[in-house]
Structures are given as structure tokens and as C-alpha cells.
Image 1: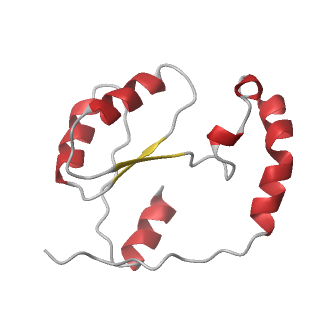
Image 2 (image 1 turned 30 degrees about the vertical axis):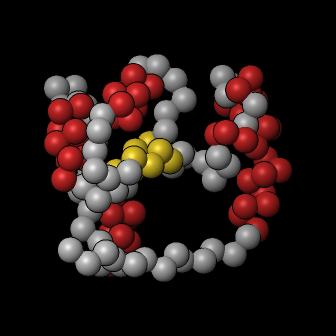
Length: 116
């Protein structure tokens, strides 16, 4: 996360990060989300993390909420749910799609700031 924050700040973006831990869960994240222009959250695959994600997505924020799978370059929606319960099954199910994505060139998106 630190490298991502550094890279985003180098692009001129203001970044705030909240990592949930015992005693510091939803309330801090909701407070940040109400002040954000974009909320990006990890897309979890299983309980108990799904509950926190559902709670975040059920709130009304001015900013959009983007769920990302920061652990894989293959979107989870493309993976058969039956392959998501064992690491070796997940790896086998995503191997070909991951190879295609890893071979593709990286192109930075052009960011446009809205005037306040």
C-alpha cells in the first residue's frame, strides 16, 4: 500500500489510507469516505470481510465507491466461483488469463482534475 500511495502522490493526488484493525473499523473509513472524491476498497472474497464491504457500499457518499482486487490482475468476476476456495484451484483457473494480462503493455491513465 505504501508504494501505491507514493505513486499516487507523485501524480499530484491527495491520498488517505485506512487499514481496518481491531477497534478501528468502519467509523474511520466512513468518515474518510464522506470527505473523499473517490473511495477505493479491496474487494474481499469471503467472510468476515464481505460484511465490511457491504456496509461501505450501502452508505450514501458523494464519491463513487470502486471495489478492486488488489491481489490479482484477473478480475474475480471472470473466475468460476468453484475455483475460489482453494489456492491451487484459483491459480489453475486464472493462469491463462494472468499470462495474457502480464504480457500486455502498461499504459498510465491520464488524470483530469475537476475544478472546484
